[in-house]
Structure formats: structure tokens, C-alpha cells
Length: 272
Image (cartoon, rainbow, N blue to C red; front, side, top):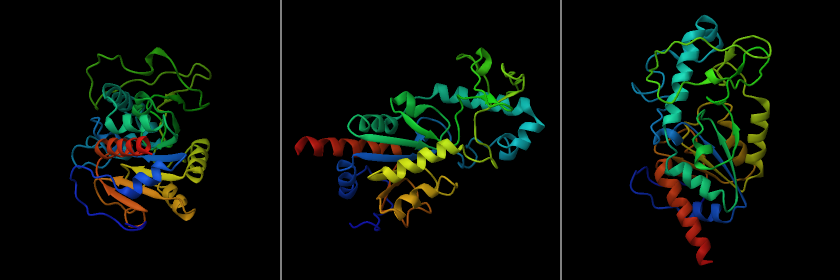
């Protein structure tokens, strides 16, 4: 199969495409863009899952915007404390572990839209958290990172998404501490975006895993790679806007496809 063609949309046990194995095997540098689907098999709901997603309880604008924050600090701070608590109880899945293993044999630059720390806990270095992190609260005024003991809930806490909590106070300027998340309407951090663009343009192949491909500017990264002639492999159980233009669109979940890919690349290298 040549670049630009696509396999069937089956969700069978993964057969690793030869083209994908070859691209990754021959790559000195692999860029990986991950979205919510990457963490789904760790038990973290995706953004758009009907009735079961993260936004089931509230409208996104109420808890993921500056206006929502200004209207009800206790609601927003409590909701993100709950999210961080859920993420801490989750464990990296086989897809996270496979990327960490791949990173031991070549440069793997992970650019994630996820705000959890599952890549890091699997053993990967994350180059760029495009949408921020649940674990990096900061002052809303001066931007100083907040590391106080009350930044997160204790491990044994029994809480839900309705939690209300008073935000801490910045130790530098006495303003409120806010979640370290990029909210709707906010620009991505320029340093995170610059690192992501550079990683994509320096890569020999780009893997796009578990992302809907509709959230900009992150969705521009695969387009940038394709325009530069760099192969882009989409890994997703469902078709997305990227599917028709990707060099290869591989149907499957992160936790099934990535271990199979790394095993195939490793086995192929051992035979050569």
C-alpha cells in the first residue's frame, strides 16, 4: 500500500502495516502527537464521549473558560482538583508503555494535548503539553507555579465532580492560584507550541494517536508535517478529518496498536 491509501476500518486484532513498520524502523527521530484517546484505556474519559465524558455534569464554558473561572472560582478549582485526583488514580496503559520503550532506541518527541501525566509515569519525557497540565497550577496574575501542600487532594479523598474548593493564594503576589490548563479562548503557550512545531519538522515520521483532529492549532501539526513531505501515521479507532490525508490511517486503539508496532519494529531490528 502506497502513502495516501488507507486500510479498511476494521477493529480486529492489529496487523501492523509494513509501511508503518518501515517508517518507524528507519527513523532516527519520531514525533508523536497524542490526544484524549491515548488515555481512554487508562480509564480517563475523553472530551466528547456522549453521556460519559468529562463534560457530562457541566457546560464546558462553565468550567473551562476564563469567564467560568471568574464567575465561580470554587466550582472550577474543585472540578480540576477532582480531575487531577482521577488522573492520579489511573495507570499508564500499554500504549504509554510502548512509546516509552520505543524511546529507548531512538529519539521520540511526545507532544500531547492531554493534561494528565501518564506519559511521564510510563517513563517518557514529554516535550510539550500543548493544553497545559493538571499538575502545574499557577498564579492567575504573575504566573508563578504553585507547589503548596493544598495544591492537590490527598490520595484517599472521596470526591466527585461537584466538589467545591477555595483556590490557594500565590505566595509571590497574593493573587489566586488557577489550574494550569489552557482554557477555551486562551492561546497556547508559545514555548510549548514552538517546541511542538520544531519536533514535527525535525521528525522522520509523525504518529498521531487518539486525537479527533479538529482542535486547532494542534490539528495543524500533522498538516505541517505532510506539507514538508514527512510521513504521518494516524492511529485511531474511528475516522477523523485527518484520515483522508494521512500517509497511513490505521484503525485501532493506542493500547493495542502501539505495543504491536513497537514489537514489530524491535523484532525487525533484531533480524537485521
